[in-house]
Amino acid sequence: MTIHPEVLRSGSNTQLPRSHHPLLLSLSLDRHRSRIPSYSLSSPTSTFITMPISLLSEELIERIIIFVYNDIEASTLKATSLVCRRWNAISRPFVLRRATISTKASLSRLLAFLSSDQTALPLIRTLVIRPRRVDDILKPSAWVGETPIRLPVLLSRLEGIEFDSLYEQGEHIDATFVNNFAKFSSVYSLTFRNCSLDITLIQALAAALPALQRLTIFHVSPLDPRTAAALPRLHSLRLVSVELHFTHFHFDAMDTLLPWLAASDTRHTLRSLAVTVRVREAEAFGHFLVALGPQIETLRIDLDEYFGLPGETTSIKRKFDVARCTSLRELEVYDNNPASAAVRACLAEIRSPCIRVLSIPLSAGKTAVGAIPSLAPLDATLEATALRAVEEVRIRYAGMLDLDEVREKVRRELPATYARGIVRVVGWWA
View (tube, rainbow, N blue to C red):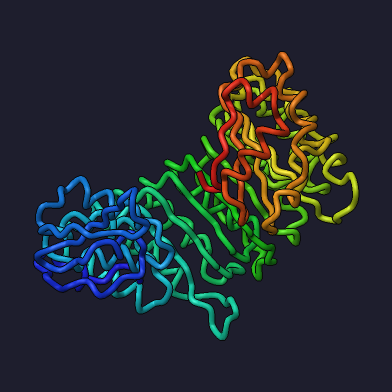
């Protein structure tokens, strides 16, 4: 479990063990003094200015804590609460924001902690249910069925629920579970990540949450249910944001899920869509854009080559039409070749007068600029009349090259677009 009560006691004066985080390495976090690095233009080495740690403002401490908030293991974030009472008080809302349960014992500890500290209840905003693997194998976890029985009444301000590495065939997620799950009435975000389960379970859990606005499915694999009993679908979805990224093995997921979404109240509310599209799923995606495209404002498409054949992404592109998205404000299209015919066709089909941002992801596993395909074919497409209203062309790069090298490549290969001053080269997660 992510939350440790001994870390959260407001009276704790426990000192922080040495951290390996680069930001915290710059501070000698003892009770009295800190060492802030200072750099001289005339010397390549750094010097240190010693000052009392008490002089650090609350705003600066909060910025440090925010900087380490997304630490995967949360160890650095927890460490900030052990510096002193002041740091403990400032870090407390961040430490408590995500609660992770992975075993029956961790669920019991969380319940005990919440019962003993009422001030923590409104601070927990995301609940992560991540069953621990047994012998490195995902197996059904009986304790998962207990989570919606006692937690909803305690976590009345919960905003998001994430299922991570859940393996479920319907043994523990049944009609009773779904009805109890509906008591998480404040939750507006539901995520499934690295899970193995049947698509009907996703539908039932999503429809159980009355306030749900955001549904994210990432790397989910199919698993046939052991029972034929139908699960209740308590509400019609009114989603604002949908992300669908199934594994290669989930052949019919999009054929099932997209028509279901289009038939729900989501057809009136959807504004943001991110989806991975393969040859088999392209037609279902095309039908979905016909039905809901006019209201989508943000669209992210990942063209995935399932067979790895030449022209495969072009075949995918023939099945859908971006021109259907007449209110589009931001478009991102990913292909292994960022200037492929499929990418250029998507850009050429834009007819929305609202378009402002185009995002083009680049990725390369090598350290040579030449490993990145040429962007030159994009220049003429980006200069088309329909795209003259674009305010930003965002190049998102993931790889080992320095961003300055990528920026120089973009300047050479997209001269007309670059000259307009609208090109921005950023890291992948920016």
